[in-house]
Image 1 (cartoon, rainbow, N blue to C red):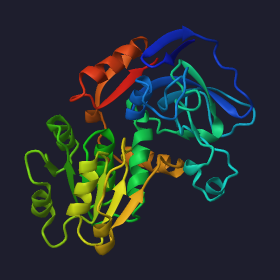
Image 2: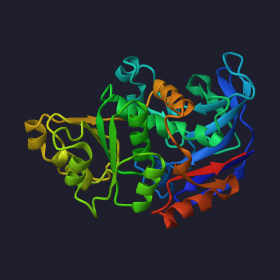
Image 3: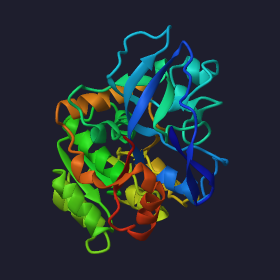
Image 4: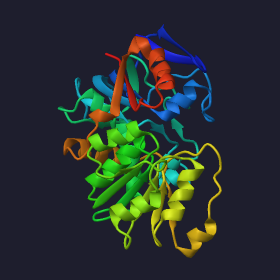
Length: 341
């Protein structure tokens, strides 16, 4: 079978390797579609701090079951599935508390463990999530990033009737806004300095957009939500000092700020304002299995719009071209997917 392996930064080759032999607790799947995320890009360019080489990427997946191990249950040949890509120890405090996404020895396929950038992949049965039979493989490969958004919004509990401001309209920011809407948020406003991303947000039905380079963010918040209530929840998906500082400066007293973005450097923030205004600053890390199930439900119930986010699809043999496109078309590249088979 064909497998894409990143031998070193910017050196990805397609090689022939044997089809995996599955254990009794594994399922052999045919990989159909792979999504490329920002973390994958960091790995490709050698800037990811927790990945060594060589590495097989591929963690945003849509697959089809080929064969099941003797100890697996609930799967049949032809089932459409995705894979929850975390590998946890099951023994540390986080794992025993149900927060295996915070495992002390966590590995994620495509980063610290071999990913599924290949024609076939041996998946652990306990990490497989069934997709709806009528779901496309393009949608299936969007479940993982959608689960990130589900987890983020879930950090504040019930969002029904809430006003939500999202900073950053890239794929994750877009999905966070859509998840908030799908879970009952009253009104949405999303900001970005990239006009293309704002147009994509509008095409996904996000009713409020603002470019802070052209409009005052605080004035836009007041105009959109009203001066009395403003935003109940602010989600930082931009990950730059200006975004988190802006979130704190524009937050109404008592607002929850969820940090989804990964910051490349430590931002200086106004802790005095956080204290005085009783702002809740919340982190979120990846997902757990239930977030995948909720994500699939959002797609099934048509509460999210995914197709506008997928701006390009490359064939498996053109894996390198996909990364080149992302580098050369930074302003207009949203979610890039690889068609495997």
